[in-house]
Amino acid sequence: MKTLLAAKVYAEKYPDREHPRKEVFERLLNRFQATGNVAYEKVMITKSITDNEDNKMEILQSVIENPNTSTTCICTNTYMKGTLIDV
Image (cartoon, rainbow, N blue to C red; front, side, top):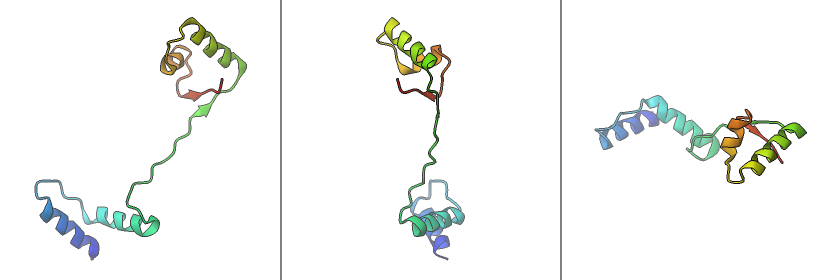
């Protein structure tokens, strides 16, 4: 019942905006009751870690050849896109 009222109040307060369904307000209420916060919980995505000597040497060689290169360029040029390496 509270969520239906919240949806109506939102529609009255913001008549020119798209009006969320009451289910949106139900999810917000449930999230707030469960966590004490309405912020959306971000999903953490981990990247694969490639840690071997060949990759380290290839990265170091790239930096020696061009000290001003970016990590994006190194990953693109060495085909290690989306990997993390601790050199």
